[in-house]
Length: 379
Image (cartoon, rainbow, N blue to C red; front, top):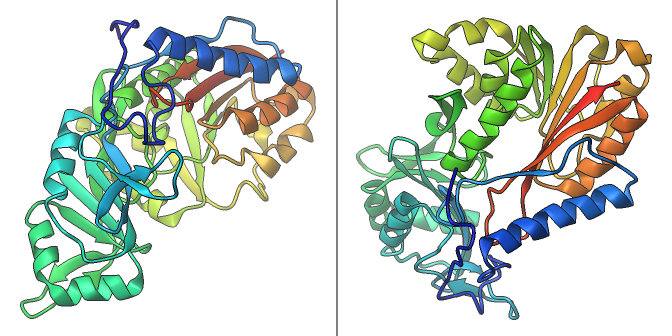
């Protein structure tokens, strides 16, 4: 996407809020810093990419459709740069216009609690969501008090607590029912969006707009390996699963979180009619694949991995035990934590893979964080 890379973003809280690190540096300087950071990590590990590191971005600001703020003593925001307190944030340059509008509306509600966590979402259809993660005693107070929760439910869909329960008024009192799957995010198959069913509390990428950039790259890379049989590690709610399955012959989606897999299954059940054939390509397998995996990698042509910050860990053990010609032809790795990604890439290079492409997708402009997509191919 084209935009002015000389852009400098300003923020009223830039001197005190710890959320953004590079404000007010020009965006092209931020691009250089992130490329150089990844390049230094590669060199320190003795790794070499076949091509120059790419850089893709959907913009220098106003991308996020999901925020995670802390509520503390009436203040709602992020931590102060130098003090252990929360900066009360009314307007944030990271937020999409829809999410900023929702934050402004949400802030009108006063919660009588000392501390808690709040996640707000602006969904792909314009829907508003709030996940309130408070102490159990505060949740009980919220249910008993009624008026605050009633006011919030008039504005948005609400989830409460670590178990993501949904408040429901039965005519006399609020009760909490089981989590509910709704289309809070979307993935892409080329230029067609696909709703992803999940909870407000589910892990997703932070930006609807930036996520399309990721899906386009993944789909293009897999399509280049015609008729590939793919195993995916860390499928989550299916953000990469859907574009990857559309471009492959078959896909085994591996994930440990049961709620995420319920969302993926519902997404497969409600695919648009012209994409319904994707469901027949996908099989779902649940397990803790960082610790132990029983899959035979020789059955697959490619691996797609999007692990947590800790990396792949024991997931790579069966791959290392195969002979060179038995290993999958390609390995696609996505990570927002390049340090653990580099550790895994060293193991993959030792297995006979070469780093063909590395692309930074800047989902987190104005910060030190970034997403990396890596394509490795067997020699």
